[in-house]
Image (cartoon, rainbow, N blue to C red; front, side, top):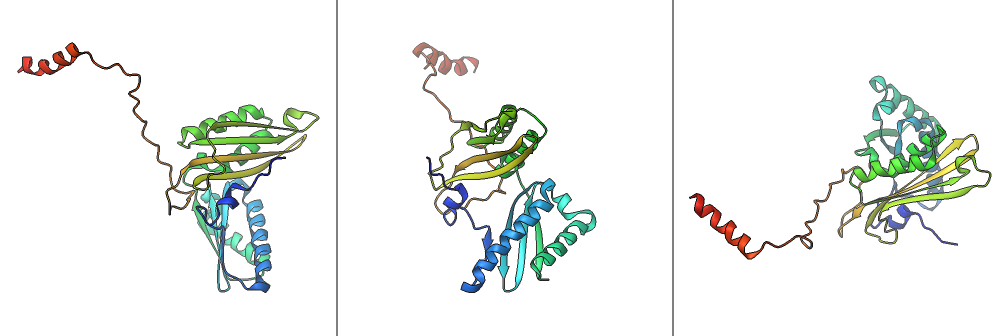
Length: 251
């Protein structure tokens, strides 16, 4: 059996930042972790249609600052900020404190966010689109956006089969064991008539230099194509002489 580790947890503290940033004493530590998980589960369920990529939580003294990174900030904020006020009130009621602030950040590139890609494939599977077609289209869109590699895996009763199985497809390269490789991971579940189908997505955005940190909201810069002169024919001697004498004849 292959022993797999989480791509984000493997790189936390090296190139990946923590999604929860706070300090707590021994008695409060477990309580804060459970509360963070409760907040994330509640917000994700409430704002699932808004395409939430991730939820960062920061605590300072008794204040809880929640940053929601979403593909559709308009749905989260609502008309005149009504939606975000309702969300803040719901979270305050959930964790029983009034010191809650919520910030909304827009995802820079939807096509290269692993979590949003996984949720998009899951949504297509729920609409009974063929899983191979959904995987292929998502991979093509992501590769056109400028990433260096993507891998997609779906598991479950694919195509309504009686026996569950796993299918995967890959394009480009995914160096999972390279710590400086900016590999983003996303997971989603599709609730189909035949049961749940899990979707996993790995997106490789490129290698980071020492001291750089991964930032999912920075737009990817496409690398300039390398010139390959290996198979180009060299000009003959008489062609070089003609090229040198041509400007003199015109003068």
